Image 1 (cartoon, one colour):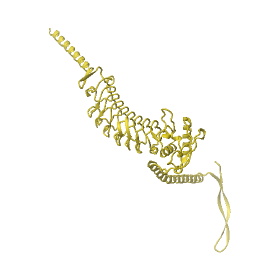
Image 2 (cartoon, one colour):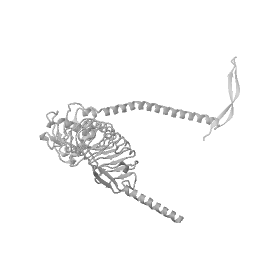
Image 3 (cartoon, helix red, strand yellow):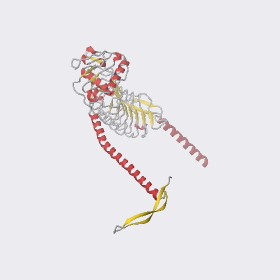
Image 4 (cartoon, rainbow, N blue to C red):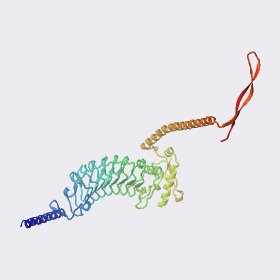
Length: 456
């Protein structure tokens, strides 16, 4: 009886344990998320099969309990839901988070310092939301962030100085398809690592001359599909790694100054002009004044403007290959022109094969090198001033050492030949005359050893 009783107790214990485990698993797979009276369910474990990569199924989720995710989570996929805001506690404690995907939600506000614990965060995707504004503390703490996508939001007004001051490691910034109207100076001064900047399809009318200051590693700049009327192209000369500038589909007001700055920029950098549809090469098509509407700026010359010096003519061309050829010749001319000569005469475009003729004009003010270029030249001269004397001293010292070594080697060889007895010979007796104090001469025999050299 005792044995039967014990067996029954063990059986009941096992069954209870199994039932409890099943109940906990079932509960974990049906978490309930409540927000404003509505509820949604997660019918699966969001962190399987990799426990540090968690993905919420697209749906109508508006909030999720933090206990849903492990504290060591590295990747959060929360896109295509109904999240409306990010507050300061949402990601607090997730110190290992590297990727955060919040695309295609309804986020309209991000509290300041919401990412203060996320120094390891590398990629944040907030595209296709309802954000209308960002400020200097929106991304505080994201010192390791490399890619930020905020495209297709509702960000409006000026993009102000210091907005991205904390993003010191940023490489790619996407702000296209927003409502930005102006770029203030130094919008990314602390982000020298930036490679891609996309500001296309906004409402930008004004670009400050120093808007892109400090972006020494910038390669891709997209400004197409905006409302830009004028732009100081000389501000881009210092960006030595710039490879692509897209400027088509803007409201360019063509003036003599814009023509000169645009042409000089092409000369100095060698950028190719291409106004073909969807081209990502440099293209400026006039909207104003009315007589130049839909005219490509490279087809104009100084004679088209009343405020320009010089009298020249130019013929327009709409052929893309002709334009590229013209820009190539300008680049070649620029390479063979002394920088001092650029100040006195400016080449606009030249291509006799396609009907575009050489046009020149005298700028109202001489061109001066950017401060960064002057600083680099001074540094180069200083290095040369130190390196040349040091090099001369090293060469002289080397010659002296070689000469001394050769001299010692020769002396040693001569002395060794005598000492080793590489000679043959015999004693010979010869008479030697001498005179004494009284003037009497006498002769005495002297033995002399005559040697004969032997070849080795």
